[in-house]
Length: 158
Length: 306
Image 1 (cartoon, chains in turn blue, orange):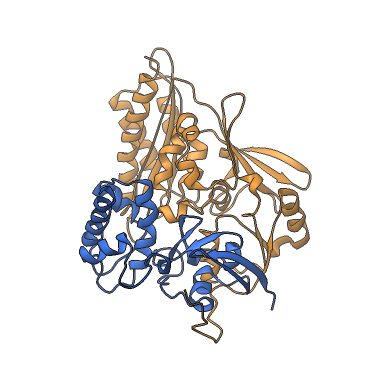
Image 2 (cartoon, each protein chain N blue to C red; image 1 turned 90 degrees about the horizontal axis):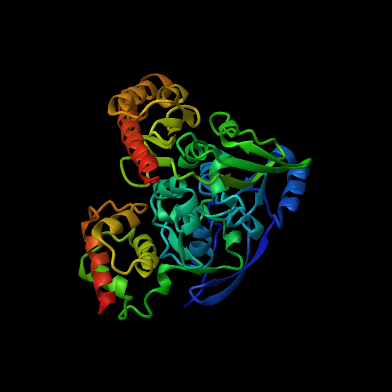
């Protein structure tokens, strides 16, 4: 089996590995690195659950090969909170606004909203709805996810 | 952070096995295409190819990755004012470019309709054009804007007009060993008007119907030239030439615009219908969107000279 050497940064830490080229980045994160916070739903780019940051930009990790991450910076939901008691402000906003029910889609929403709020710190509700249009949630009806994003944006102003 | 192997056994792999080669340059890519022939597929942003491979609908035995070719990622202004874009330029970069906004406003207007932010960060202009999905925005925009494509191949470079580039569903004028390397959008005159309109069930979903329009207006306010190009309206981007001919030489009155829209919607497009939209509904959308797009485009073409 042909493998390729990869070296990339994962949540700020250097990582080196060997990978078969057909392994998706999502599967590499989950099965090789044990970073199971990145969820896989549809695995063909529709649901957004597997969204991670590549060099700070949101991407679908199921539509990238792990070998393509070579030389890049990858950030996953595990990189957000320093400890279970010390949530990232965006996670805290999801907690407070009840922005999740089953939680399956949540990592994708967080990793989508994180760079969005950095680019657009005072978004309107409509802009938030457009920003999360590529993420599916089957529980919340999106209302509380939008509330959480607005709450996180308010928190950033203070 | 603890790194551990949660699943020591082999995880299931979605795509079938393939040989992976990261191309270093256009020349290297052409050599690889020559060497591997039809077994090879070019990987651009991967937002259509990887899903097809995950489903095993496509099973290329060699994947030539273009993502390491930095020379193909650029947005430039040519001496004649045209916008010149490298094939591997990310859709997200086009969406955020002031040059695109100024020189190719039709392209700029269409960008946010292309899938979702997480797709546009990876998706490329060249990948979408070469994929030639009839439901994609970029092929229709390229034709309406009068763009031209630069192809590199074993015997050198050649230019292909956008209207000659698309040859039906998922097929283009590119030869088997040719690759798309650059797209040029000509500068607009001050009397050019434009509009992109589409309807989808949710922002970012495939359009049920969409239209890209460019019109040129003369000093008297009459239409000199018009291009109306539809997406998801047939087996490729569909240009409504009869509707355009009805407009040319005439002042764009409300009645004329309605008649041209009806001609395009009822006779020129060939929508296939799907679970979200019947053929009748697609034709209805085409008529309404065309009227809206033409009104806006003529207003822009007329207003810009005052």
